[in-house]
Length: 233
Ligand code: SF4
Ligand code: FES
Image (cartoon, rainbow, N blue to C red):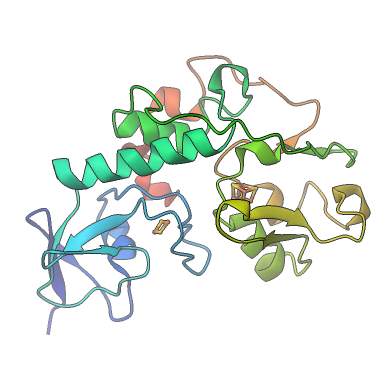
């Protein structure tokens, strides 16, 4: 028996156990997402991947595909909600793109472009979280963290190091470095770690490498995020 569901009217095949976003991605259909990464177990925190399944909203990165499902994604209503979530992420942190070296290569910024976000809309929180520049090769700017937990999962599941963690509750939730001092220099983190490669925004940055790619040649200058979906990021 063939397994398919429909996504915005298009027939999407899937294999048993695949989530909606995995099946959509395999079929070349982009669903916005920030905390989902094909190499890691879903986290389900950003809610950017929300779709309607048979009329009810759910996160497509955690919802298993089932035969005959009717899934809606690219609708005015859902994209307006995604845009509001993106705006909230922008105001909760200090996402001042003109001075951020991740600009043009940033998944949050590219998603905001994709959703047509023209302004942050909400009042900025202007957090003042101390930057960690203790490590010889890597800088951490916690003011840009969107709490996607990708670095936590990469460090724990791939690097076997547990360098990062999420701590606190509600608005006080924040990324921590698992060292007595709380400093990255006091961990065994290296630039070769998977955790150094996965941050979708501009928190984990290589020192002395900023602004290396000219404007026009940065990842999302060349193609919008919806067209890089086959890379799974
Ligand atoms: S530092 Fe980057 S990868 Fe880690 S939780 Fe924050 S946004 Fe996600
Ligand atoms: S990508 Fe599904 S909740 Fe973040």
